[in-house]
Image (cartoon, rainbow, N blue to C red; front, top):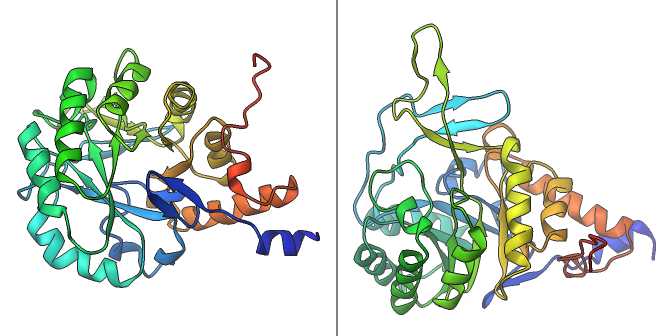
Length: 314
């Protein structure tokens, strides 16, 4: 088969729980707004899916500015989960996004197990939602958030509560700021999670040496971008080797080569995050790059390379 025909016939479909995606490339929560902000730059329907900005029961103002600072190798943010709240999301954001035909995964967050459960219940039966991503890993809030993502029993409790109220596939987003991420992944798998996504940001900080003050008003924030890719890749490999549910890789994915590394490490899909801020077409370019890679290596399906890493220790 010639290279052009091979690319046209390439099967990029993957399955996360009971959700079938046309390709394994999603946009990461918190980096792509509610989709509309990128609609004039990206063909939303072409994406594997969109993970929308985190949603809570009530609107949140987030942390005071400055909330974002660039570093030499990544971005620090302390947004603090600012969002419009579930009612405005369902009434104002979701209808437009639904009309685009994009696969929509809603990132949800809360300060208590009960809040997570109520939020999942509110979104149950809402047309156009393909799945929930449970954020138990944000480092930029004082309550809830990362606290749920660092204690296996608490992570399991949130997962069970969301599963009990939800009628769609449930992904649990894990924090890298733990001693043993495999333990966290196994805890949420046993609690019923359909998939896990990892990693969220690593906790970091930056200092303005002239003012001698923290660069972020919140003092510390979450580091994302290319700097965290090796850490994320290692954790995805460890988790994918230890659980039976699908793993979605996140962390510094900027190019198709980056995404292919995660797929070889065992990720069934990937999310593109910080790259969206400076290269809005990154996700589409990654889809094209994966297709070219598969054709070049004689594959007909992306599924043929998932978990294909050869460590020499098999």
